[in-house]
Image (cartoon, rainbow, N blue to C red; front, top):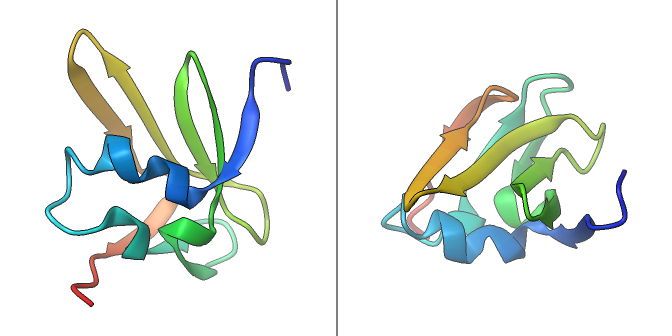
Length: 89
């Protein structure tokens, strides 16, 4: 990993993801494609820097979500997630 990358928890993704979801995104249940662990987004490990944010499974470390903002467009890549469950509570 490069020196400009900082690891945080998934709560740090709340601001950028609020543009995509009408609910608190940190309450979303994310199922990892590699190990099938179900975790709240807030429990994922977030790595961020000038490139955007990367959320990794807390159990196996697989990248489950990526978000990158370019020219006022927020791009979300969820290839590492089998399922995203939006919880209203």
